Image (cartoon, rainbow, N blue to C red; front, side, top):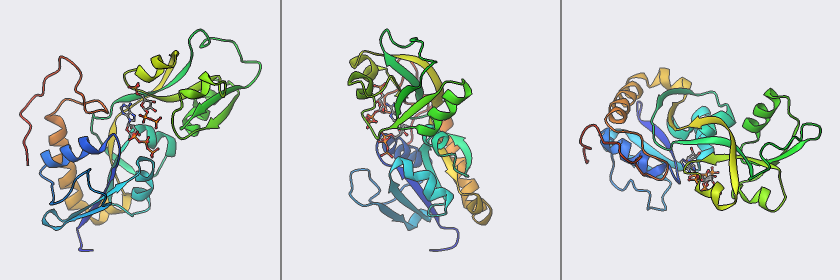
Length: 236
Ligand SMILES: Nc1ncnc2c1ncn2[C@@H]1O[C@H](COP(=O)(O)OP(=O)(O)OP(=O)(O)O)[C@@H](O)[C@H]1O
Ligand SMILES: O=P(O)(O)OC[C@H]1O[C@H](OP(=O)(O)OP(=O)(O)O)[C@H](O)[C@@H]1O
């Protein structure tokens, strides 16, 4: 690959449209780059950049080990994986929170004498959180549909992402405590920051400017009601 050429890993799924939109507004766009395609690698020589489309939880791995110079991923994933990457930008979109939830009426149940069972996709965040409170937990690792676990008696509580609260409500669950807030972050490989300093700093500058001209949108691409875009969105 050409010296100075950047490789950027984007999370497929909920963050991809907002990420592509941000790159377009920052002036980085390439022929054929689309979330609709089945392709996973998009060389865009006209902007000296190659985009990779990877699973959200794999983005920090690509960036930490140099498979990509930079990437876009949710703070939730970074908190879980504690990867050794540089995190220069909060991009604002993909806003949600990582919360503890329980079935309505059971959130304050005193179970401190025995271990409570907590189902989650985020075992490290969960362990840290309950350890800090001195609450013994048994963590049940799941990969999705976490809200089902208390409903079928698999767990007493869950730790999962909450945006609108709709999924919790649909399963008669209530948010007991917010552990952390999450938004999409731009992350950079530490060695790349030295070796490709100029193109990366230019990219960070442009992404920051493009982020500053737009209010944050939710993970589903919806803008919070009543908030206005500060400046017109440039189409590229
Ligand atoms: N309901 C939501 N509202 C806002 N942002 C969300 C929401 N759900 C997820 N996100 C953000 O989008 C990121 C990607 O979520 P998505 O559901 O697309 O992938 P995933 O299924 O969690 O990924 P993986 O396949 O790696 O497990 C999350 O890490 C989080 O930062
Ligand atoms: O508060 P809400 O707006 O309802 O959003 C929260 C839901 O969104 C995410 O699920 P996702 O759609 O990614 O499904 P999965 O994690 O079960 O695969 C998250 O895991 C919650 O289930």
